[in-house]
Each structure stands twice: as C-alpha cells, then as structure tokens.
Amino acid sequence: MNYMLDKIELLENKEAILNGAEEIVNSLLENEKLDKSEKLMTIELAMAKLNYKLYNISGDSKEEMPK
Image (cartoon, rainbow, N blue to C red):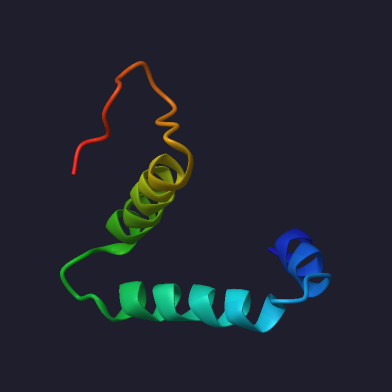
C-alpha cells in the first residue's frame, strides 16, 4: 500500500483520488451482505469492469464484459 500512496502523493489531484478510494472502501466495509473474501472479490470485479469501460480491455478472450 505504501507504494501506491507514494505514487499518489506526487499527483496534483491526490486528494480526490484518496477520497474516492476511501469512499469505496467504506462502502464495502459497511456492506453486511458480503463476507471479507466477497468484499475483495467485489473490488477485483469493479477494477475489471472499470478497465473495460474506460479502455474496452477485458483481460480475457471474450469480446463483451458481462453486466
């Protein structure tokens, strides 16, 4: 985590990045429907979906990411 924080510290928009990450983490921590491993899986899926929506890269051989 320190590696990421060091990289973010150099950015002009660092506060927005840190606040956005904090909002995501807090939202998941408050979600009582998910256990710890499911919360981590949710983050992984969210990163894959965001990557696809931003760059149309799914990371697998399928052309379309499921909704």
